[in-house]
Length: 384
Image 1 (cartoon, rainbow, N blue to C red):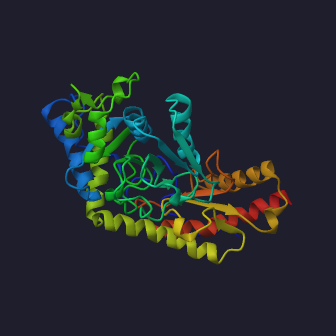
Image 2 (image 1 turned 90 degrees about the horizontal axis):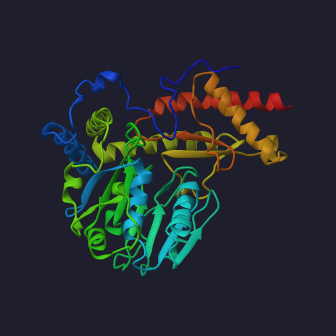
């Protein structure tokens, strides 16, 4: 039997993610349309995004925060191109985006001293293998695996290298330990449900020192250039962006930040996301045919919650058949209008991926789960 209760919002995509509750286009009524982003009010709005973001996240004093092109991808690549090569680098990956950074470093930058520390989907690599003598690039939360680092205790406080952290699906949902990080990147389209195409990069004083002292000796595209006359271009970190941002997206980002403040800031956002994970965990514990992709409960993501099908209904399926099964379940949920875009990521093991960031209401997650049971049963019957 189909459930009768439906989620009020069926947006469970892992990017771009659900808008904040109650959002409508009216939230963009204050947009600075038809004006230059370099005008006084344009710069003021960009600076407001920076200031509100830094305040909510509790960015330490002395750090810089700027808006950069090309979403989180652009932010990560900008910093790898500008800083890596001064010393050996450890690249950690346990899902597709971390693997992409490894490709950049080994195939595009072609650095000589690269050590890759990897793990299969559902696991973490040996975090203790990093000793602080080298640079490090890693994702705090593996968006396509639903596996996160539980903390940053494994990063030495007295490290010699710099640490670049891709935090795109962790920022505003998880407690980032900035004392153990030097570069932190994210995008507007994840936890706060903003529009895509813009990234943010936070730099520690150590990261700034690396930028100003290290000459990578490689061509640097304009959208990657953070230096001016050999020194950090401070204007980028006050709203004077490298290229032209969308002021519509800026207005939307401000709306998300103001909403975040209204629900208690970082602690409120973290609590909302954790409540979504807890709701799914209770359901998984009571459901024999579903499990988390993350093998260790301490590493379960509260944002990109990745699930796998288990048990006799799927045990005999080969990879292609299991993929077809998972796609069928996701398609049924989408066709019913109760969950859009919850199919597993294309490089990940077949299953479901349900976004649980703070803009998602726990009541909607709870209303969705019986529908997942219905879609699963319907897919089992269909393949019988």
